[in-house]
Each structure stands twice: as structure tokens, then as C-alpha cells.
Image (cartoon, rainbow, N blue to C red):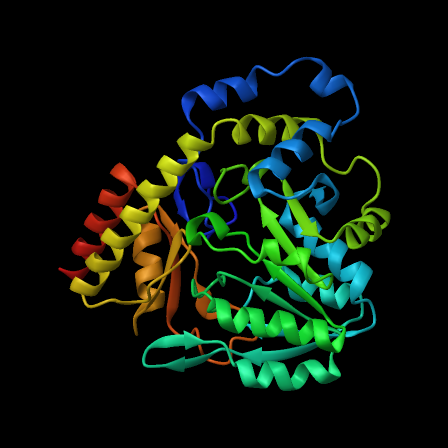
Length: 341
């Protein structure tokens, strides 16, 4: 991609953004904000109440953050500074950045392949936990799109609890998967869940997320966050979205339907793809670089995951494609068909 290219002129399918999320009525409500949203310091009471209702947990279990990225930064800074952390890889790349900034020792364990599926190396993780201070998991995984079976995740959480280690689970794609470990914080004080408003709610540009954890950990995290780091406009937009959940579920269902459609289309066109529990698909083809360039020539931007860090050849010749819907999906499929012809 050239630096001078205008991203707004491209069909951006590279960062798993959700441009379809906001209804016209919700977007209008967000833009018609009161002057106090700009002039006053942020007030987090309403959004914390709405999140608490949304996740069915207490206010004391929630910390609103400047995106899930800040959530990761806070958790890593407060729990893992100068310590060792297990990171199943590939993973969300800013995790490496935050660990490095906190002089943490990253203990990488690589996902394996089994019958064309990606598998978490559970036994290796349980063994390495004995000599680490915790683990950071993305579930569902980005960029693989795979999930960790509930029984395996519970085993990791229980082992961390027994060994007095911390277990951090990034659930940025939770709403596309539908299963969460957040209720386990009632029983395991070592569990931390991180969520985002970027993927399901489509607020990537406003940077809004939240941490779910035991109240003792939330109190500790607040001392690392600083004051008023989440702006009032993001808070107002988040509140507005949480009052329009039925619409977001409808959009989610449309994306899931389109994802199944796209998966079958790719398979029919001899392009390897994996089932996904997110809003994207990972594909593999020996001509992946050529496919990337040809899509870009048609102003479709996807993610060249072959360049991901620490992937141990698992992502060789792969691309990650955010699932589009409607006319965008038709255009993507048409472009791929023309390439094959």
C-alpha cells in the first residue's frame, strides 16, 4: 500500500472494523450530543451501569478503558512488569509491544495444526505455567479466528488459580462467538477479561473498551490508568450503542450469515479457508501475495498475515479478510471470480 493512498477510497477489509454496525438512528443520536460532552470532564457512571447490565456483573467488576489496547497496557503494566508471561502465538500484535515496554519476558507457545484445524498446545501451556507469572490469551484468536474449547480454557484458569498466576483473556470478538469466561471472575480472583467496543459496536475510531475482573484487581488497575483517559464523546457513543442492542444483534447475525456465504464461496473457488468465530476469515493460497495485489488494484484492502510476528510458518501464504455484507460482499466475490478466470 502506498503512503499517498486515501484509505477512505478503499474497501477496508484489513483491520476487522465493522462499518455496518451503527444504525442511522443511533449514528444520528451520537452526532447530536449535548455541548457538555465537549466542555465537561468525563462522567463514567452511566456507561459503567449500562455495561454492568450488559454483562450481568457488578459495577465494581468494571473499568472503562481507552480501547481494549489500553486495557492490555494497564493489565500488563500492573501485573507483568519485569516478569514472564506465556503468549500463545500468533496473537494480537500490540501484546508484544506492551510486554516489551514493561521489560517482561515473553514465553511464546505456538499453535499447532491438526486435521487442518488450529489447536492450542494445552499441555505445553500447563507445564510452562509453573515457571511463568501468567498467560495472555485471545479468545477467539486473532488472526486465526479459532476458539479455545471451554473445558481447555477452564483448565488453564484453574491451573493459574492453583499456581497463583494471572490469566488474561482478550474477548474483543466475544459477540461473534457468544461464549465468555467473564462469569468465572466470581470464583477466580486471578482472571481478567478484556473487551472492546470496536468490533461488535463499530466504534473503532473512538477507542472504547473495558476490563472485567475481581473488585480488588479493578482497584489496582485504576491506579495505573490515570485520570479521565477515556473521552466524553466515546463514553456518550458507548452509552447510545448499549441502548440499541437489538439492532447490533441483527447486524451481527447478518455478518455471521455473510461469513458462511463467503467461506463456502472460497472453498468452491479452491481457496483454502478456516471456519471462524469472529467477523473475519483467514485464507491460504500459494499465490497469496498476488491475490493481495490484485484485490488492492480493485481498491480492496485485506491483511497480509504472512508478515505476522512470531508465527513460526503457521501463517505462510495467508491473508485475513474482514467479512463484508451486502454490495461489498458481492463486489469481493466478483473480484475473486475475475481473478480466477
